[in-house]
Length: 223
Image (cartoon, rainbow, N blue to C red):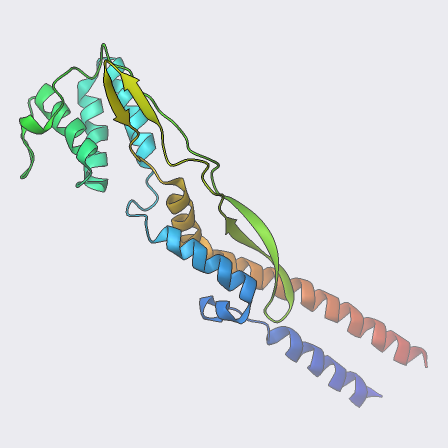
């Protein structure tokens, strides 16, 4: 009888301890692998890391409206460091450098700035296209069934907006791609997510098998 209980305990321990997962195992589950591939495509477009360019742009506009050009310059400097080749970012940064009478970096001159003041007699049109991404749970077997969070992206109903003002047409400018920012952050946090899920699943399954072993031992003792 003792030998039977020992063998059962060893079998249960082996089944729980064999559960492991890493990023290299993603291809073992088709649904998770497909979601992960889409996420990587978006994450590859992000060059700002955890920084959201829209935050610094809106902060800069707020400082401009308050007449604080120095703080606005600091915000546009961050934008310029994130997006040095973006035409509009370069124009804003050049304009603030001129206002604050600061030295221009190589490749940027006062002529690159706007020819009108940014803090008066101008209208800023900001738009958010479509829905931001979210997380959803899918059932994944690695080899035990677990609920895993994956990124869910939504199609954009339109690509941008067009504004008619002063007899001229202005097209919207992509400032922040929330899909790429969200996906990049998810990818960076994935190792931690994996660790938490693996530990949580191992603990839950270990408790389950432990209780089953206890029940089995109780049944055998009753005999």
